[in-house]
Image (tube, rainbow, N blue to C red; front, top):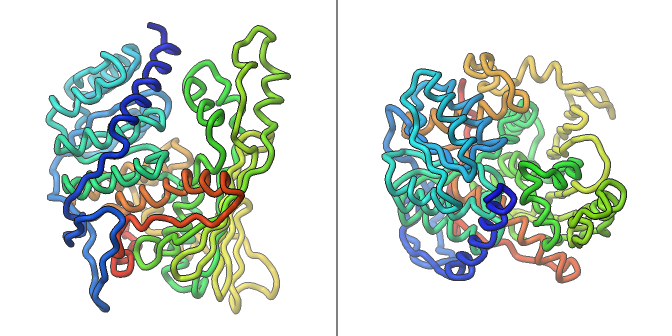
Length: 461
């Protein structure tokens, strides 16, 4: 079976499996240690209490199995995890045997024992999770496989880590949360943009109070993906399909993750509701017409995804977030990262800042002086200074922090509630778009515990 047919078969198998299991609900205790028997049922929280964040026993060595070692998966293995102390790569799974062999060879060449290989089809990750003695399963598969892999890992006693987004439906978000709570295992979405240098500088400035009370944020993913979506390799084999049937913000987490951390979402505040609208769908159709051969079957495809989607989010404390998705039109890559408070605001693309009483009146400042004075400690650490590649170092830093937290037995920087809340903005935006931008409520995946969960600390390097 060739790769195209394998991926299509995987997609059909997933849809069949989802139809049978999507409505299933899991019950159990919550990661915080507080009882929480029912889905979506908020519980009152006593004033002044602090809900401890979930942590697992420390691990001397983190034994990892990788599921999906194409572009990003192989990047994590070769450029990050193979360079980290206290990591053993024990197993590799992929639809393509050549990819499995490539990673096995690289790991063996690095001096570690040759990892076990799994390449018997789209569900061979289940065998990996059942048979291998692992601490962590990391998935970098197509989006629709993130939840099945993570759930299988947790049910077999492994922690789970996934590329973004963690889930593509609200039911999947709940399944991640409830499985993590029941099994008491970490389930983390690897949102690398939370570890970018400017975003971490911004978080440090917020924590130090330089921006005052944070009131508003703007964020988004603005990336011309037409060549990627129509590629005959890699993400082109599956990512374009989402544009055929879905209309909303399909990729919210790169933008919203860093802003959510500055606003303490799930840790003092939460997403309460949103409105979303999409413009016309033109970009992919023009690409079909102008760049595909006349006999290319992809010329017959139709697309639902509006070229630009704009979503407005309101939090429980009244903060506002503007979130945009723009991937089908010609444009240089950028993201939006704006955090605005009562004393000033921080912007990226371009990088600039204004702080009342510190900046010249009505003028922007460059970030150079702020990096010198307020650089996030992790970006000054030796580990990051030695890193190379990976979106400027943030990929290495996110993997470094995951391993560091697991080895120390401390809470992760992001947890399953973040994975669910940030990823849920995708399907929530689709619902609002379909209802002509009507208000759509956001689930409270913490069931009220956002009120007492502590904010993310500034971690020392």
